[in-house]
Image 1 (cartoon, helix red, strand yellow):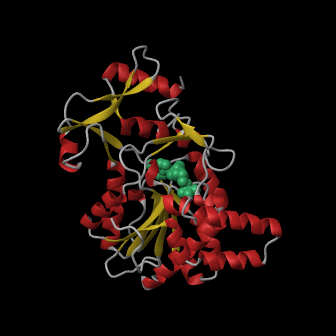
Image 2: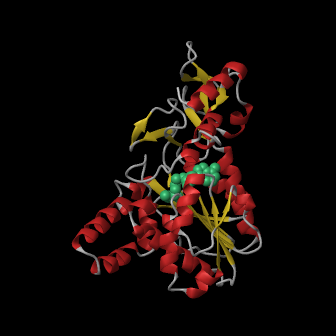
Image 3: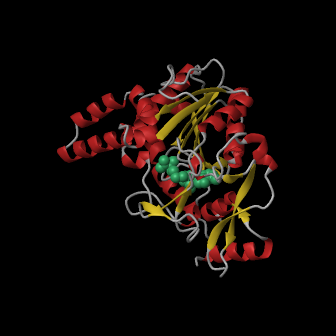
Length: 362
Ligand code: SAH
């Protein structure tokens, strides 16, 4: 058992099974043993790879989104440029390098990074040296005194979800308990019906089906949407989506792992429910655009032209890397269709790339 598994097992012995969201939050964010707290999980030697780590084409394309959307906001002289969960800082580094061509943008941008991992804060400090970033533990701590431009890539999928299972005509919360020997975890059902789920989950569902709810995601989106509704601004959220039912996943060394085994040692995620995020954003007064498939958005932002320009001055090896990166980012059998992009902005502001609907409606 990992040290965190022992702590969680003791807690369950003393106080009973815990919600899936509690298990997930502790596995990822426990102050001493949490997955993100203890390591930099990204890249070939880590556990998983993200779009900005695959190719500079990702962050450079999002630069077009950021600069044009800022221009459409009326090019405010001050703006909070915020990234949630910036990983190694690669996306923002690529974005800001391209943005140097628009000095008014870089002069206006005050860089705020919301990051809980000390290891990743250090990586971000290295890459973003020269841009005077400020770090925060939560979005609420970002100063609320200027228009907002926010990007979150693969952040919402790391926020904890609660799960509910359909039993007869009711929903029961799925909890994490201990097996008979007390040395491994297993899923159990709460004996009582969940009135929370009864209020929001589908009224009709097949026996045994699973409903997921991420209160942390909804309250974060609500806070972002309320801010862009109050001040000018826009947020771009890119993440895994499209799964139905149980979408929990554990990944370790670039392969699937067991969700309940060795908490703190593998990355735990759930698909993002863009429909639920869109509803809470609208309720908070913001306008929702998309979601679009990631590949579609990148193409609208001119990823092909950027690829051609970079290839023209690349060595053959670099050109091959660029080409395979492009394919992974946009192709419909890769990230291009697994990932969705949704923008949440002030009324009257049309974020670049979202002018027409995508293939999917909410
Ligand atoms: N956006 C980056 C990293 C994605 S991994 C990329 O695309 O490469 C998830 C990131 O979110 C990591 O930086 C992780 O440390 C951070 N993170 C996870 N939970 C968080 C939370 N509750 N608040 C802020 N950051 C969080």
